[in-house]
Length: 255
Image 1: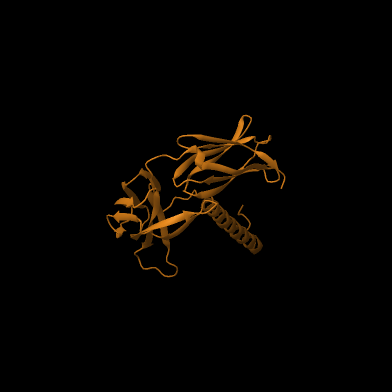
Image 2 (image 1 turned 90 degrees about the horizontal axis):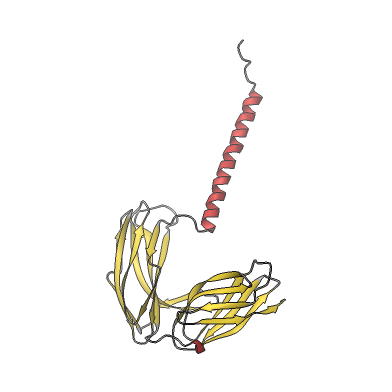
């Protein structure tokens, strides 16, 4: 028995289902791409390593820029000074005249799937000092439309000879905000020394929540916010420095 021919209505429905399926696949791919981008799990085409380095006094180092992409990249280097706001964001400016950075090159090209090492020496008239070498990358190929530029930072900290004293660190505020389930901490470095906060812990019983470390610049303040997802409230905050620890009890605030 020969099978009955399928009606035009069937084929129309089949094509419609195929279009819907294709749209679903595209939507799923877009969703996955957006998730990767917003969660920083996409593999970057260009990288710089290391991102942050620290020295006592003078610096003599190098960093590596790698082009993982399929097109050659032109690179221009620019050293910059910066300050840091209460929220930890850097505010960049031209390199201070008291900071001296000698790079092995100021511009170069990187072929696809290749790496390039940049060597440098740095010193400052007064310590501590800090700066960032920004690598500005752009494709050398002619492309229509928007031309993508990538900026990669290599940050250098030059420490003073003597470490900071614990007496120079002041906690202006340490509280648990119950309405936001957040621990806030405001600290102040009253000295002319640079110090790194290695990590910050909010502790309540056997539970804790951690915040990443950061450099605390001379005569600067820093505002920290640590989400608290535990059932019981935290009781104190612990800040670890290279040579000492600061422990501060938490007050409780509803607003």
